[in-house]
Length: 84
Figure 1 (tube, helix red, strand yellow):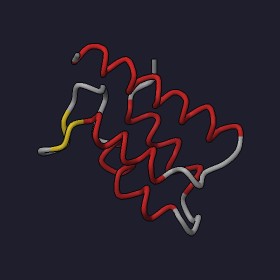
Figure 2: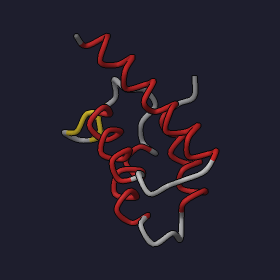
Figure 3: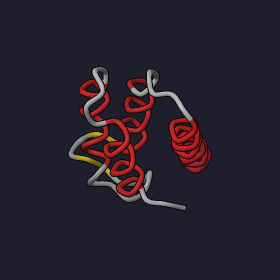
């Protein structure tokens, strides 16, 4: 499984310059400082950052978008099982 940092770098590379990206970038940038879903970025949990990033990446389309969003959703689902 890749780290959140690796995923965030790929998202940034794929999406930079798109008109809607600044909204997602506010959450993708903190992801670049995280490795796992158990990490924190100041007072925010990795889970909340990833959730908000996914919400703001809804306009992203294509094969890479589907693959990366599925990967993040799987990580979220797994983290929620652990914390439950």
